Amino acid sequence: MKKKLIVLALCTLLISGCGSKIPKLSNGDEAVVTLKDGEMISANDLYNELKDDYALEALVNMVDKKILEDKYGDQVEDIKKSTDSYMSQLEAIYGDSLEETIQQQTGYSSTEAYKNSVYVSYLRNLAILDYCKDQVEEKEIKAYYKDKIVGDIKVNHILITPAVTDDMTDEEKAAATTEAKEKAEMIINELKKTKKDELNDKFAELAKEYSMDESTKDNSGSLGFINKDTLSSDYDELVTAAYKLNDGEYSTSVVTTELGYHVIMRTESKEKPDLETVKDTILDELGSEYLTKNPIAQVRGMQEIRKEYNAAITDSKIQEQYAKYIQNQLNYYQSLEN
Image (cartoon, rainbow, N blue to C red; front, side, top):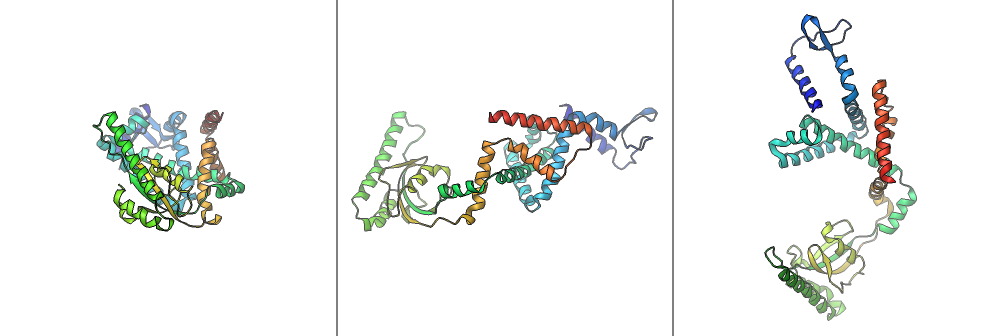
C-alpha cells in the first residue's frame, strides 16, 4: 500500500506541475516538491529514499526490457499482441474492476504497470527458453528423434458417446455407459466378420450408421492425417492406440477417451520427417524439459544475457541489493531441486 500511495502522490505532483518551470536546488538538482522558505525536496533526495525498497525491481525490469527488445526485435510485435490478448482476457473477466483487482492481487499501482510486467515476462520466457536450448546436447536431440518422432498416420474412427444426462441416477448413468460400450463392441464384431479387402467400405458404412461424430461420420469417420500432438488431449488414448496398429488394421478392443468409446482404423502412413526438418521443434521440447528439470535455469538464463550485454549497476547500494536478490533466487530454486 505504501508503494501505491507514493506512486499516486508522484503522479499528482507531476500533473499539477505540468507547464511550470521546474525549480532547482543550489546544487543543480531538480526539485520534486517545494516548501515554504525556499525549502525543496530534490529528485535525488527522492531517489535515495525510494531505492532501498522499490528501485531494484523497477531497474531490473527496465534493464531486461531494453536488452530483450534488442535481442528479440523481430518478435517484439508478436509479443505485444500476446500481451494485449492476455490483458483483453482479464478485462473480459473483471471488467471495470480490473485495475482494483490488479492492485489487490499483484501490488502494481495501475493496469499499465502490470501490463508492462507481463510484457517483460514474455520477453524473459524467450531468453530463458533459448538458454535452456543451449544446454541441450546433440546426442539428446538424436535420441529424441529416434525414439519419439514418428510419421503422420491417417485414422478413421467411429465414436459412441454414452447418452448420460445430469439428471440421471448413478444406476441410469452406469446403464447408459454400458450400452454405449456394448454398441462399440458390436461394431468391432461386425468388422471381424468382414473380408480384409472389404474393410474400408464396411468401416465407412458402420461410421455413417453409428458414429456420433457428426463432423466425420459421412466421410468414413476420417480424422485425416494426424501425429502425436495434432489432436486435443481428449484424443490421447485414441492416438496412442492408432500408432500401435499397422495400415489396414482396426482396433480389436474398444478405445476409451474423454469423448466416449471409439472403434478406430489406421488406413495410411507417411514417412518419418528427416531430422533437420524437425530439429527446431525437438529443441523447443527438450528446452522445455530442461527447464522443468532445472528450474534454476530461470535465474541462470537471465544472468547470462545480462552478462552478454555488459549490464553493470553503478549504484553500490542497488548493486548490493541485486547481488542478494540473485542469491536468494538461486537458493530458492536450488531448494526445489533437492
